[in-house]
Length: 457
Image (cartoon, rainbow, N blue to C red; front, side, top):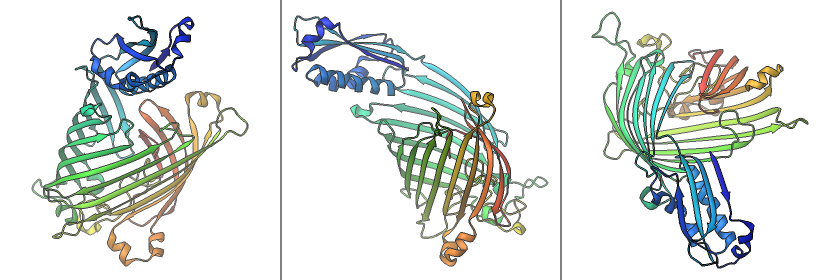
């Protein structure tokens, strides 16, 4: 987006230096849909400013706020002489070019487990109050699909808050790893600050676990008893808090900065699912120029940890819908999607190696060294190589209580590898090959992997 701030001619600037200078009015140009109150809200502090220096400071902040609404292609703000004959007052002249009110997007996604097509249609500022309606559909080869309608509204109730609500229908096919599919229908309501550093989400979901059916006998199921025991509807109402502090220079291929992300969720009000769940993620990225004007080597450290505790008195075990799963090219490289963690016995049916059941505790850590490719044509495309090492584990509370720290360390999966990374309009494209240093017998290993992610993880 192009944002410009300019001022009146220099012959008038001598008067503007007076500390009693104030803003008289705002003159708008180009706002064919956007209502004047959108500008008035963001320029409120500029109207209260005294003196040219304070006015310019507040105008610059207001321009940034208007740009963050993401409803304009260009914003040009000028200070000009006021229409009234008062040397201590100026007018703010705002010229904007609004974005097209409709936007279409198509993309693909793969995580080495499933490939999907995504399509979305966004209505940008159709009512003139900087709102955005988003319609999304995702269809995967496995039969998974998601349909959602969302509304995002800044300046919520006259406060510097963003309000959003989403209604969705989500069917995910996990038959390859856990012999079931899960259908979730619900609605989420969220309130956040403009930078989304703090976000509060209210969730209401209905979940249905659909065990895999036997191909030869439609009335029979081909799932383990652990999965069949979950085959009943459940309703979750919860409150979830998110905190995020992101200073990375690029979320897809970061070379400097860091990320701290934390979330905690409490479920149980007017529903049959009760638990506490928290996750934390940290990243640190360092670049080394080695005498070059551009960064040549990038060193990245990543870690994630999560834990949950069921609060159901009748059934202390957590539901499979709420547990943690790890594995995959953007989760734990070297292992298949949901390829790590507790499993049902292979003798119980379901997947040949046993249905993946997830766990109540997980942790992962990784170190990446990124470097340029030797061919200059590869550098022009943005292609970079990487060496990495990662480790992780997912388990349940019973194993933590019964086992020693030594057993927990012995169960930690470890893999090293190398690969290439390419940034693209659809996200981070990554191809890698891994050598497994530690794995358990029932783990699903995937040495060669390709994946696309919207961010680096």
